[in-house]
Amino acid sequence: MPRVMTLWLPRWPVQRRLLERPELRRVPLFVCRRERRGVMTVVSWAWAMQPRADGLPSGRRSPVARIPPGMSLAEAMAVLAITHGSRACHMAEVDHDDPIADRSALEQTARSCRRFAPIVALEEAERPECLHVDVTGTADFFGGEGLLARTAVWTLAARGIHARAAIADTPGAAWAAAHHTDRLGPQSGAVRGKSGHARRRRWAVVPKGEHSTTLSPLPAESLRLPAGLLSQLREVGVDTIGGVLRLPRKSLDSRFSPELSRRLAQFTGAVVEPLVQAFDDELPQAAHDFDFPLSMHDSFDGVVGEVLGQLVAACVGPLAAQGKGITGLQVRLERELCGGWLEGHAGESLVACRADSTRPPIVIEIGLFRPSASVKHILDLIRLRMARLRLPREIGGVAVDVVSAGVSTCRQRMLFGEATESAATEVGMLLDRLSGRLGRSAVFEPRPIADAQPEHAWVGVPPSATRIRRSAAAARSNATPQRRPGIPSERRPIWLSPRPVLLEAVSVMPDGPPVRFRFGSQVHDVVRAHGPERIETAWWRGPIVRRDYYVVETTSGGRFWLFRRLRDGGWFLHGMFG
Image (cartoon, rainbow, N blue to C red):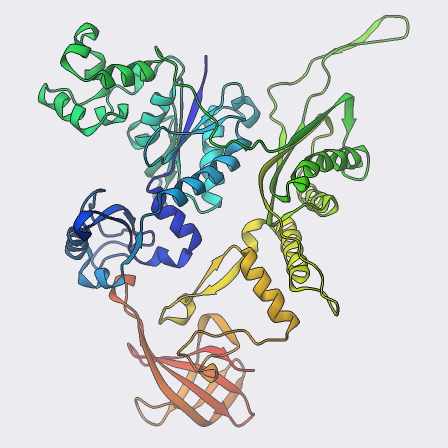
């Protein structure tokens, strides 16, 4: 029986923009389409880092404004103001709709989902938000369907993509389950809070052959029906999938649109819904099976390293001919022992051993910041990842699959010195090695954002190719890092403490700078102070932060960045100048 996993990426137009600009997570983001007569309608919206409202318990956030797609932007702003206050409207960011870019980014995500199964398809919709993955026979490689769905959700979450997954017999049933994982049974994957109560479910598995019974309580919208047909069903008192299934099949076409019969047949499996590959270009892959189980005692330095070098070279060759390089790679170590009877010289059977097909393979994911066609560099990354894993004693085969690829730039070297592109390549290779040794989440780039509170005035984002080139160019030209416009360089320290350090300070005037303060075991006398620079955070972040910052110079020649907390007058050290 076929099995299909549906990955639903809610509000994909907004998620795509949050991936490109992480700083937009702090504000309400609207993606709008311009209609006739200049009216702007909402395509999708979200407030990723919604603040906690006053009066609510710790950890609880205020209710989310209900703004459905198709609502005018003016009405959406009114609803946002009623729910969160008028200041939220001034914070909001509005971006124009770009369905082509949304679909292209979704296809790139579909390519990365080939690690779960070879066939990945986009849903048939004007604005797709779901991916259908044919997982027939592949769930055992991940330890079962439940572990496969959970792995898919958290793999996308590691890339900053919120997704919900469901596995069922048909794409229609999987689509319905993925959109209502919160309403399914205990087999669904739930994220639990500190109190132990389930807050939300992100994945679900519908038992084989039971999708009609399990999903019958779900609303009729789960059958992917148009709005007009749903209105006709509500007029006759049918609002669930179970109610639609109980309707007489002979009278469906005469009383309703043929679309209802088609969707119902796709849901039950009476009509096959083919899955068309989401992308045309096939990425290379290579595999090698050993005649006998290979010992992993020498790990990468023995036969395994030679075989991996040949497989990686076989995958890099076709891409290099097209001017492309690898950005994502998957290495699988098959943990098969042997498959048959081992016989002695005299024909006597010594031992019988079977392939252990229940044990999933060891999967090694390799991600690169820049497209690379260097076999040596990719092998070094695989070696670093394998050094961090607990490998099996024996393997029966090795497979290499290219998950994603990109266009690799090649520029001519300068006559005197190396080109900036060569330096950027070296920086990218360094970042790849650091991520291979420390983990990809440990390598990020601090990007400044507009925020009055210094410890929140930056966000960590993955390094991009453009940023790598700029950093390499600045390093070669000995250029100083650019600061945010509007803030003098002498008002921001080189070293900033992760958390402000409480000080013992003495000030002559109640609202003036300190004349002496103790930092650690040393007492500093202030000879000159510049300030104050007052900052106040917005109300939507929770407790209001009000501070007066001073740049002070001491008798020992040190320059410190201090602030006085206006709530209680306490003094803190936040940074030091060079």
